[in-house]
Amino acid sequence: MLAFLIFSVVIFIFFYICEKSKINVVVTFLITIITSYLIIFPKSAIDSILNGTTLFMKSVFPTLFPFLILTNILIRYGGITIFGKLFGKILSKPLRISNNSIFPLLVSFICGYPLGTKYLNDLYNDGLIKENEFRRMVNIASNASPLFIIGTVGVSMLENKTLGYMLLIANYLSCIVVSFFIPYKKDDPVHKASQTTNTKNNFGETLKLALENAIKTCAIVGGFIILFSLIKEILINNIYTQILLKDFPIIKSLVVGFFEITNGISLLIPSSISMPLKLGLISALCSFGGICILLQCYSFVYKNETFKLNHYIFFKFVQAIISFIITFFICIFIF
Image 1 (tube, rainbow, N blue to C red):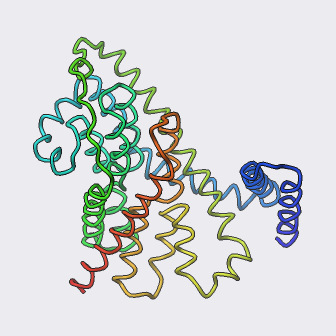
Image 2: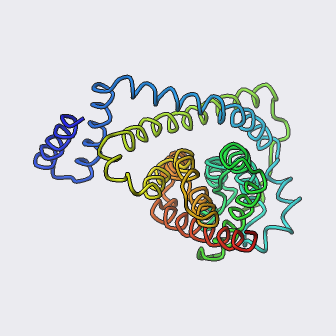
Image 3: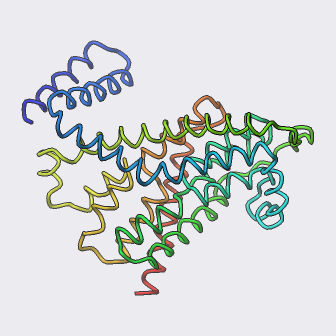
């Protein structure tokens, strides 16, 4: 491992001297380190990749794939308009959004990252929502799924379903609160023609397109999960990190959670800190999502010049802080 560290430092200095673009230096250095790790520590790397693959196939794919197929069919048959009419009066005015944005908002509440962002981008490209609303909604319709918060965190990790529901409520409330912090500018109304849906869709063709879209989306999400499982392995399972953060387990869990929330939360739960602080930090990690989730969302909208990654990350930090405060005070009241 010492030889690997020396090699990394030498490579970084060499890149820094030879290349003027600092971003090129950083990206090339990181990719070189990951590739070198695969070669020097193949067993550890393969184990982490298998863990990421198992996590995706057992926990993510079984719920994500059928949901994507069904929602894609729903969209082709006018589901956006129907849900907009059904929930428009309840959600549109309080959140200052159009009826067309209600569907991706409900998707983000039901299925979680990154589908809310994906469907918002589809709506924007189809002309069903305008620029300002898209920019606001990508920060609102971006949440962890109930299955993850209640099932994975509440039941599996905390062994308390009630705490899972409490975390879910805090995440939903933080999403609603942050919507009032995001600048609002009213768009021009969407033309009625763009809201019409062709009800003469061929169901076979619709199903084929839905399957293709679902497979592509699942491949992207699975790739991110597997890649960040490897990055997590490099980040925490080395002697230097273990020495530096040996006496700071909370910092270690937050650093890991900053990149990938599932492993960060699993490291945070055994810590000896008070329950309100622990649950508050877990809630903040769920609201922020981690770099892995943020890049998943970004992968669907990177071609859209309206999307600003720095604004998105800033408001996710704001939501994480709000979620922490809500959860912390609820815990103080309960405990």
